[in-house]
Image (cartoon, rainbow, N blue to C red):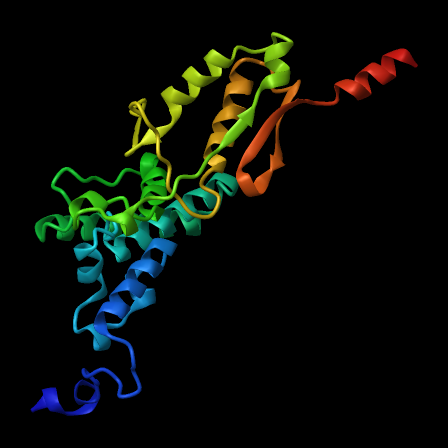
Length: 255
């Protein structure tokens, strides 16, 4: 009896009468929103399609690598750790981090039992940020779903760093920078696994990762005081290595 009173009897399981589009159109919109980065809970149209969002995404090869609730817990743990790097004496945040990470471990054990995560999957605080960014990418599981068609093509993002001036002046070796990036860029969570062709798919400012690696290279080779990575065209992700404050120093010497 309790099943037919209160909230459980108030749920409308039939699609609304005003809906004028077909189930197929709704599924296409779901895939479009998923490619833009929306999570299943943000899309939610079970009453229209008669199927859960995650099942539709799995059928089209767009399901996230890890379940959404686990993803948000990892995201929260990463943000707390970043806060603790700036505020090491914040004991309350340390305690909150312990609670969040214990929930992550419990959820991970459950999802391994239900086979929603592979048995070898493991949460580690040192690689949590990488894991979060990988899950932030759309279409990482496309090979598991239906055969890839024209709609399943991934859009490439070109990231360019112009090293012309410092290379001409023999301040740095371009081959050395290329080798450094090939060794440091991570694909599938592993460095040095680029293969013959590299395809990077992401949203927001994920391309800034290569800018960050270039800065690390300059610092490693003690030329960070001379060179800076400057955005010459942010819309196209084009950056350039430029000399830093050299003109000012020359002017001071002439005076």
